[in-house]
Amino acid sequence: MLTVSVLLTIGIPQSHSLKEKRGVVRPLVERLRTRLHVTATEAGLQERVDAAQVGFAVVSGDAATARAVADEACRFVGDYLIGRGEIIDTATEETLLR
Image (cartoon, rainbow, N blue to C red; front, top):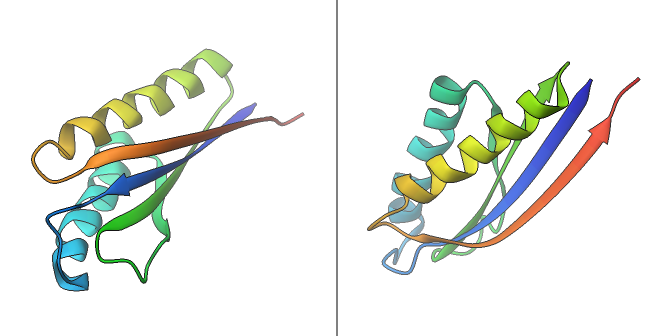
């Protein structure tokens, strides 16, 4: 079994308040959960109005499937952010569970 954990740092330059930031981040996290069935949350930079960190994880018995779902989720985030923000940094960690 493989766990793939991804932490995305997202820039939201047009956001000028935490309310505007939440308007981007909350729907993104919810869509990751419902559409791609990954565990997702806002994981950092909560005090910043122009940036966020969103983390998600995928667990699968098949390593190729776990990596493919994580890649699909990253592409989904990039597509979702068009006109709203951009992915600044991506940190990925894989853990093999026995």
